[in-house]
Image (cartoon, one colour):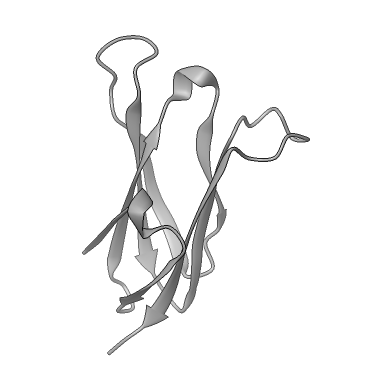
Length: 100
């Protein structure tokens, strides 16, 4: 299993086919912003989970689990889903290169 965080943004990661990639990103859903997968060409998204918050408005972590199927990218944006004309506040992109 490979674990990635926001420090891995704009990098290329070596992985094997069927390897699990866990991506953990900071989030604050109380602001209306959510991470959304926009490119999963390297595999499939299996799970999205937001950690519980200790109090309303507190930041939390968004956890994504991907399974690698081929070379490609996992790209997400951090945006308000209903604000389609507003650019995302942040992007996360990681390239996947197959090894072995």
